[in-house]
Image 1 (cartoon, rainbow, N blue to C red):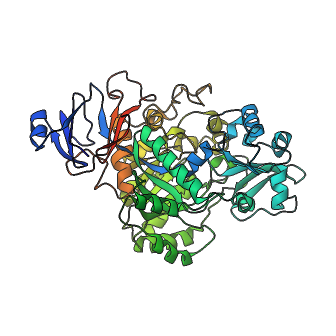
Image 2 (image 1 turned 180 degrees about the horizontal axis):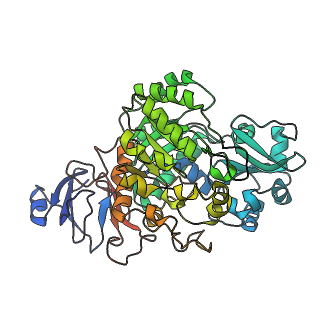
Image 3 (image 1 turned 90 degrees about the vertical axis):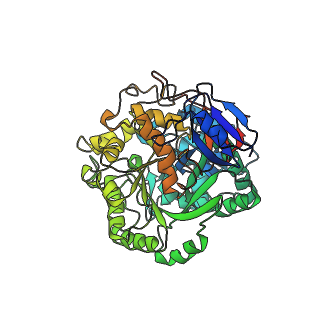
Length: 533
């Protein structure tokens, strides 16, 4: 934590200030201003860090991410970097033969007709070992016949509440399990060890630091979809000092339970330290691709409107109780009905906490101004707001022309005075913040992305919903710090705050500078280098 002075390039403070230099001492920002003022704030020797025209920004904060799961998938049968059926099956066929199950995941629904792979494909390359592979959004899993047999799933198995077994015309399971139907298999999976989770957390931290992400909100801290509860992993890593990032945990709300779980959540509340937990995650609906996103009107050609995982009346009572207990609620809401149910629940509560709604695939225009009026933060995953194959073929045709203009209305929420936070939802999509910032600003696929070959990928998706670079970067810094109750420590480069800093490889505000391939050259946490030295 030696003293440093950063100068020689632009400094984006996240405020109206445009200083020439910034000084750090004892792990804190001690001065921001012109060079002479900054140097006089330091009483002893210091290291001069020459920005050389590069931009200095606050450490970025990912407000919705699943880093332990993301790192685990990187270490297993990782399909996230692949994009077609043949590549997926080759990866499955060559997966470590010593493992009793083939697990990992990250497949894209767009690689299969109707978004649905089959058990027969897996059976051809893994006839004897059970296979369980969640897709990129973790709302569905691809399984083979061996896994179905072990779980006792056949034509007579009913769909569980809040879940669906995809079936062939004769009623047999076809090989895809949606939402809670995944839980028919997950109890059979080999149990991850605490050592597995510890190793994954440290790998995730290393990887995220390399991207300039110095803090995050883990969007599900609890057991979900085959993943074990990582609460103890975070607590242990914080106690040993191995957790260098600042992490907020969103404690998982069990959808099939009632307020009896509140006492258990209170016992897990952590208010101070490297790891805190004062937020509760409620997943109010599913995703549009499998028709579990809760919509105000039926999907085109369907006679249903998706699924509200929590009854709206119960949701109001739950949010009221959580708010009174000091918890902010982190809602998952994809469909316009789910968004409205979450806003209604906040409105009927005491509304004293920093509630936020993530994803916001479809938002009815009548609800856009309610984010500002209720003080609810829009937690955006902007990377998805493009014309790409999965959305254009599996979602848009079933929304219909009236709802298509309501997708990802980030610009409208901002214009109405709403606060934005930003995150990646890794491993659903890449945690690279500059890929997401590119989309927030341009509403097109980043060049070279997995979806960039789609013919419409460079046609802006609802360009009136684009953000400025300042708005997008603010969402990834101050906005995300706010929802994690870390705005007193991070989010802007102001004296007294922690020296969580990133020196980019360029100044992305310079004219004609690309955003999608921006990189972090140097990254500091509390003034200590964690990447690039």
